[in-house]
Image (cartoon, rainbow, N blue to C red; front, top):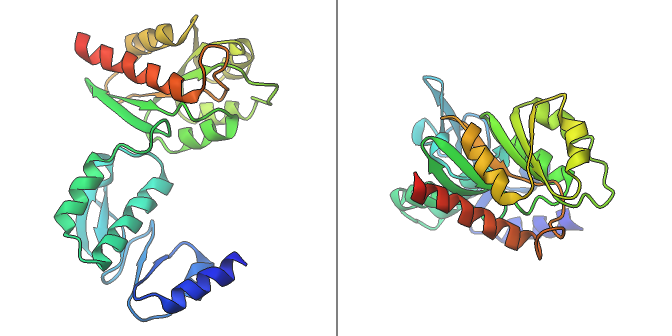
Length: 250
């Protein structure tokens, strides 16, 4: 039913924007006023990625537009989202320079791999919405830099073991706090350095102590927040205030 609904949209659309990586979308779209985006090298006026001197760029055809490293949103899916936004914007004649400025400044949705600050070359990310293992796994997979992971809270009986494989791919230090920190330590201690602390302010303090230029410090707890907070929103807001306090004192 979803595919049929989307087909009706495509048939009546003045402009068709498709994801080249989505086989079904490619099959539904016609050829008139069609522009595509994808994570491969684009042809013609389509959008995609170019690699120039080992640097990855958002691009239209052979024209490099913006280094991926200048985006404040994390994950390959968000790179695709940025390319989709460029394709959509161009279809209604939004100036490219304005769109690229918007992408440079966009920090993402609150509490969802949200860019918070760059402090002396260390990027701080608020992913407080990650209240389960799957969300934290996805967040970690989207980072191409050494990660200092802040995690903990109430696991609510969930199986935390899948975090071990996610951590072994790039987490160099896990700073753990909260009700079920013991479980997390058992799972992560063989895959990265573990630091145990009492609460989130202590986690931010210790993360700041061990972080080095080029690292990403990410609050992605893999647990609910109710042992210490009213919800993930309060947890994320407290994290942002703590990080902003680091900037004041730097």
